[in-house]
Image (cartoon, rainbow, N blue to C red):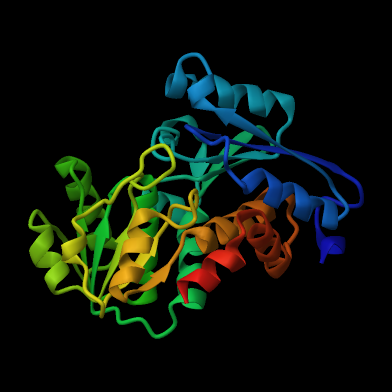
Length: 299
């Protein structure tokens, strides 16, 4: 596998993550462990905007510095997945369609934006919620991550997707862009969340509510029904209040760990040219996040 790669032997690889509140991210460990297993000297740095003067306003200078230092690329997370777009030279087809980037590759003096979030979410969903009904799906959140998971849900076959976000302009823009990409599907911006949930097969949660630094439920618990499935993209904590509440009601649930694993699988390949061992990366994630115990408690 690695013999066909442009990066061979003990070649050193530098990469990193830019975002806010990322100190608990497991992405560095996933990349470095897999890099070591592939015979690479792999270093992965965090650029936490909460600890950098200027915050998100420093994004441009961080990109320039990383490129100058010879990093293979950067992962991009909240709040920069859309802010980074005008700072790039080109976009992959998926990133262009989504209007959001979570991976920037530095190659031959150029900055190329990719999106591995949507594929990571789709792989996780297929593995973790086989047979889930997809006639009507409600999604909370229309930001950069929301764009990726909405795109994934439609790729997975969702027939109707109702999107809810407190930012009406952002919600409307996402609905319009997705409607152009998937003209045969029903995609709507909703203001009556209660009515949308009453008719939904499942719920995708793509906001920051429930993260360690922003705890709580993203919607009233009484809107959930036992017949519905609930998917979370947050993985710190792995078991959010939403998932705990949904399971107590009887819903099928899927945590954000799978998306974290598979977006990292995609980014690793882009940074190194090597196809990583996804199962090995999943096992490493599980050991770090104590995922087996969490899953056992959910059964």
